[in-house]
Amino acid sequence: MEKEFEVIIYKEVDKTFLEQYDKVEMKVDVRSEYKVKRIDNGLGGLILEEIQVEPYIKDLGKYERATGYENQFNISNWRFYMAFDGDAPVGAVTVVGKTEGLNMLSDREDACVLWDIRVADSYKHRGIGQGLFNMGVEGAKKDGYCQMIIECQNNNVPACRFYHKQGAVLSKIDMYAYYSDEEIRNEIQFVWHLNI
Image (tube, rainbow, N blue to C red; front, top):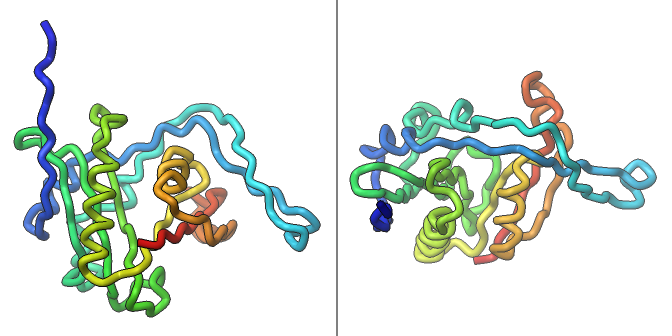
């Protein structure tokens, strides 16, 4: 018996949906990582090399709980978009505007941050992430932003490829961004900029 093709509904939501937002898994199937090779201690440039690693699952959901955003920030300049299969949340994205205490914007008022994007494992590779990303970009344009700043890590190769495909430019590599956190000390921060 064939499964009936689901219709995914995309919509902007408010903070009352954040408990549903957190129900969407945020797991990365890590099979490779980008290693950064310094030429002449970095003065000669950097080379990124994708290397295969022993596969593992990284659960980003343990670091990122949407229900906790308001405890840390004023989220009045934040936009939330979600994807639903019927009543079930299957994807979500957050786009952040100027927010006190948010360092990623460097006090810029013309830029926003793609704070979070997630798609449930069983719904990946169906275009849901693209649909959510497009909604986030369109909302950011309407809000008057000209650039979107995106952070990911060297062990999230699928995300790196996705942002590259969108036209984002890798603009910062910080090999010590997470050094104070022993659990993720060896991860490398990649920051992308996308003109919108």
